[in-house]
Length: 104
Image (cartoon, rainbow, N blue to C red; front, side, top):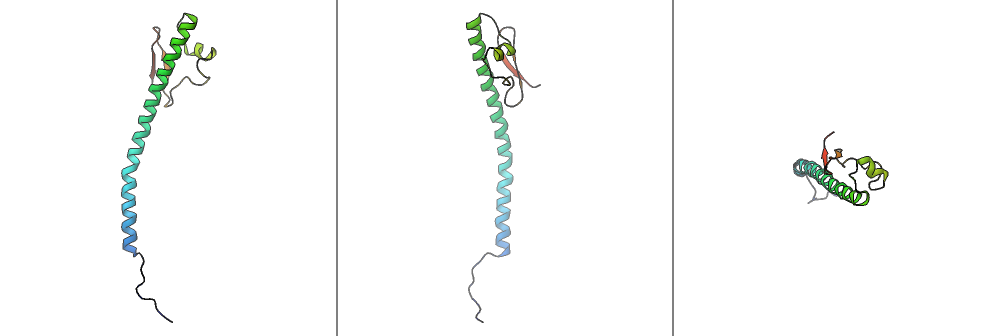
């Protein structure tokens, strides 16, 4: 039986070092991903509020009156179920026609 000499391969120590490096990289990346997802939700809510503000102005031009969220959905300016921000904040329209969002 012939023994192979000069076999090349990874030792256990080399594999453990690679696993340690990968673990450290994942530990660094996960907090950054969670921060970015909350920032994306906030930007999505701001964009939704601006879109609703545009629909309020459109409703005001069409009907010469300030709408409520219910008026916007029944008249087709907003889809049914689109009364909250993507992050769950409640969208409200003030008596002066300014749209804002707040935590429920």
